[in-house]
Amino acid sequence: MFRVIKQALRMMKWKELGIEYGKCSMCGKTLFIKLRNDDISAIRCVRCRASVTSMALASVFKKLVPNWEDKEIYELSSRGPFFKFLHKRASHLTYSEYFDDVTPGAYKGAVQCQDVQELTYANDSFDVCTCTEVFEHVPDDIKGFSQMYRVLKPGGLFLFTVPLSAHKQTVERARLSEGELIILERAEYHDDHIRGAGNVLCFRNYGLDIVERLSLAGFKNTEIILVKAPTRWGYNRRVVVARK
Image (cartoon, rainbow, N blue to C red; front, side):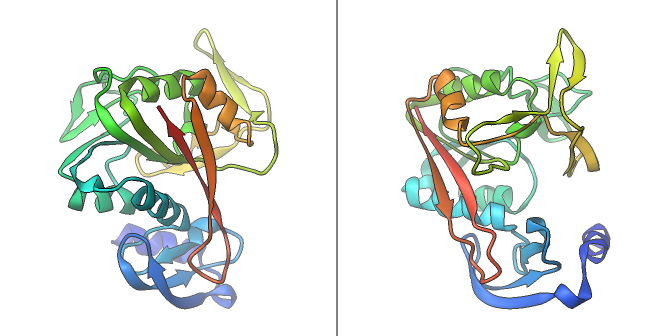
């Protein structure tokens, strides 16, 4: 709790602070707080701490996956409001993290390590796969998308978010070549609940051609859904939906 308060105080700009009543797609009627104007992560649900991004994913998930509580679901995280939303109600939830010092398939404590580029699960294991802001950090995202396709059952859904611009083309910022990291654009780093603030390299900034990238992995029917923000402060988010 102290860490959360400390982070909030670091982000806050008192003159831009705002509170608004509304409805969270995960926990219902709530208050939203805005800590500052220039950062989407600074808007949160007071009850469940969900961000605009998590709420957008949950909104689409609930609409497209009827009776989801009984589905086989795989989530690429073991923390956060969206994970807690799934964990509380899903009967069959598999989840994982990527740990640098753990072999994929092995466990660190109670959490399994998985590398999305080389998942250890069997073919056709899940009805739904989900993740929030993950694939911009995957060195070979096509390989990762192919693995998500492989572990989904026929007719399964892959629902996820990434920072996604309205530009047509994805901008490659970095790549791995035979184990060597090559920086193509100015290095960009994001926050991570395991590695800390500003410690996770962003390999790319996605454009609308993410649909074509998913098709290379086998997905035949992909759409980008624009979800209206739950507050008057804006920050609509795009959710990617790929069908096997």
